[in-house]
Length: 266
Image (cartoon, rainbow, N blue to C red; front, side):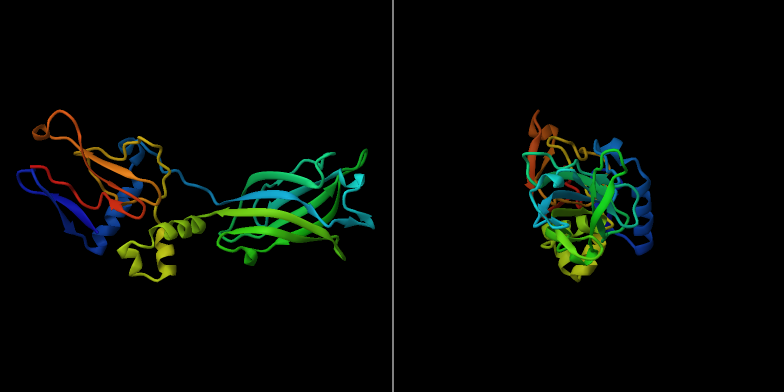
């Protein structure tokens, strides 16, 4: 890590190494700055969530009634994350669509590796809805921050069928593991164990930048090192000696960095 230092005449810039104490001060100052006004982009805090798709029922049998019979059309599914508030529910099964919901929704989760509860309810005319079966998707079932498959439904005593679901975690750790896949070729990450690199990436800010967005401008202070996780960034500069039009100095692509050095124009 380093910090730009200008010569006495202000015409040249170079990097000077930082001590750990100086790095801590720099990081604190960076975290407290309103970077969005300087760069034209925002770095929102993204809450931990899970994208859940309740697909449908498979091999269902309630009290001897085979799947597909009309008394299953009043069933709906409730979904919640253990330890978190809120949740969502699907619509009741509709005639002509079989035992399928294909209902997708984002669910707030309290943990990096949450457990999810799925519960089937029956709509009863003139009476409160009744829970008929439940299933748990434990955090140990997630593979690479996602799960796709069937989970068993029980009525407390017996299996009553299966629920097909898809879950994609959107947590700090999940985003860090995604970033590691794109950035594992960087030299400074290759010097770390995988777990160390992922822990480091949890402390970085991930931005989705719209095409054409100006990340920083020539002559401005650059106090971040940027890494392109996916996409490309064009580096453009202007100088009177080059004419009236900006000149493209180069492009950076997946896994490459920019902002970690200053282009000096004499």
